[in-house]
Amino acid sequence: YEGRCDKYCESFGHVCVSAAEEVSDNCEVKYTVACNAAIQGTSDMLCRCHHPSAQSCDRGSSETPELPPSAGGGKIQVRGRQLLVDGKPLHLKGVAWNPVGKGHHHTDFSTFVDRDADLLAKAGVNA
Image (cartoon, rainbow, N blue to C red; front, top):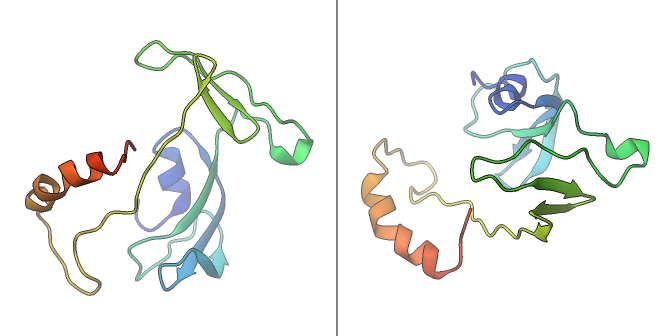
């Protein structure tokens, strides 16, 4: 994505509404930039993306328009901060997983994935 939030958001059909660099990998904003500006010298950025057809929270609406059916055929909706699939709440459990220590570099993660996938599944990670 060349360090640009606009290109990152566009990669999944959204538009960038804000871009920033973070302090010490803790999601605290160090500085903000324009969405089309490259943030150099970082492995991560804070990008806020918005679906073009979704209503803005600033307009007072608590429900976004219905999204197209998923590949599995389920009806997907967003109500306020709740994601629904076929009318039922979907709870995603995820982690920021990186088996490589800070300051180290590895290009082949396959051995780490093989090692950690079962542990992540047992912990209930589903996203």
